[in-house]
Amino acid sequence: MTLGDAQAPGEQQMLGDLTPATLTMRPNLDWLIVCDHASNMVPSALEGLGLNERDARDHIAWDIGAAKVATIIAQRLNAPSILCNYSRLVIDCNRYPDADDASPAVSDDVRIPGNGALTTAQRRERAERIAHPYHRTIAAHLDHAMATGHIPIFLSIHSCTSTMAGRFRPWHIGLAHERDLRFTGPLLDTLRRQTEVPIGDNQPYDLELGGDFTTPEHAMTRGLAHMQVEFRNDLIADEKGVRHYADLLATAIKTVAADAAVMADCRKIRHYLRADDPVRYSYAPRPATC
Image (cartoon, helix red, strand yellow):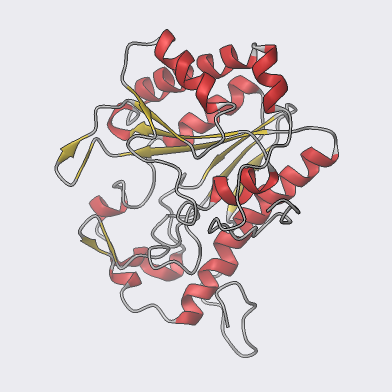
């Protein structure tokens, strides 16, 4: 039985009542903003995964500041947003549910006691009760938008630490991509024109097919233009920083959106995935070309 299967008869659901996603509707269906790691909340049945308060509030549990940035950008675009309501340590919704790091026993050298001896049934329940409903919310929204004549640009908002493995990350904002540069390319150019802060091009992370889940499985499988962004979390750890960097990115997005030629290309369905890419088409049909 795979992690995506329904629970076998007699298996007890242990997580209680859950609300995996928050969808905030706004009228501009030409955009969708998502945030996989918006919350550090843990279902009460899991007793905080055994973490102390410091670790439960640290970056291992969520993307610090990302939910607030995502909300402001959605407001500036008057666009819908979908935020995941549970910690990435319960299940990381930007990973495939059966991946080893979907519910890690150790994260950034911190032991996660509540993930130390997970059974297949426990992993499956987290996938069925949190990850799949969150992603079904995204898929249903995209299907509705496209059925009503919109070709949404998909924006996925993340944050990251200022250092990793002892190395400093100078980039204030980093854009990740794989092949499809219709929106990300002009946005990189615009950010570099409009600000003097360091902007990462596939730094500190690239878009990893088979590793990252949300953008490949929702945007790329549908042939939608997209952007996956990382903000350095020390820069958006307070309200002033959140507002500054959200406005910086939103202004650049709106500048790109004013370019008719760029938008005409972004509003077309274009498939960049190849038949041998490790993408599963979990929530969209595989096109004949792939």
